[in-house]
Image 1 (cartoon, helix red, strand yellow):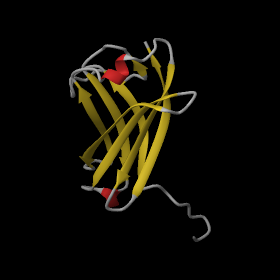
Image 2 (cartoon, helix red, strand yellow; image 1 turned 45 degrees about the vertical axis):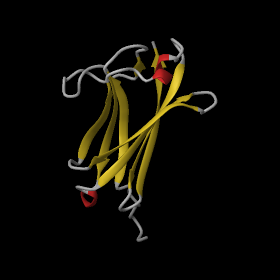
Image 3 (cartoon, rainbow, N blue to C red; image 1 turned 30 degrees about the vertical axis):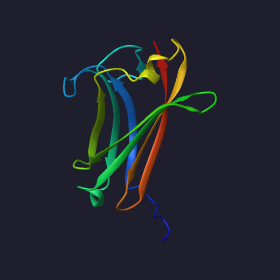
Image 4 (tube, rainbow, N blue to C red; image 1 turned 45 degrees about the horizontal axis):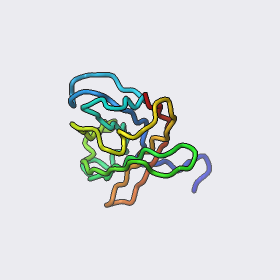
Amino acid sequence: MPAGKTESTRIQVVSQAFRYCEYGAGQGQTRTLRIGATPLQLVVNLWRDEALKDKEVEIQVEIRDEKSGSPIFETLWVTKLTHARQESALVFQELPPELKALKPDAVYAYYASALVNDSNDFAERTTRAVAK
């Protein structure tokens, strides 16, 4: 690699959060897991390089026990990369049973990853989430 050049990731997970409304309702995002609140959106905010425009990306989300790292809940969905900065969300009208069993005031790891199958571009990010 030439001097002064740095390798860059063509896709990034820039943030992830929860939202408690129908998609497009304009509610704010939070890192608080509100036990029992629905509809629940799992939100993943992506940034992508122009070369990945119109590619399909698999988004995986896991809620993990922060201490052990064991997954408590996981899901996967596929979307198309249409904008340079893009929000993707999966909406649950009913709370998944695994999330109903979360302990109030416990801290969990909120893991999100993005994989572009055509190019093998991959990004991941973990933040903390508190159950209330």
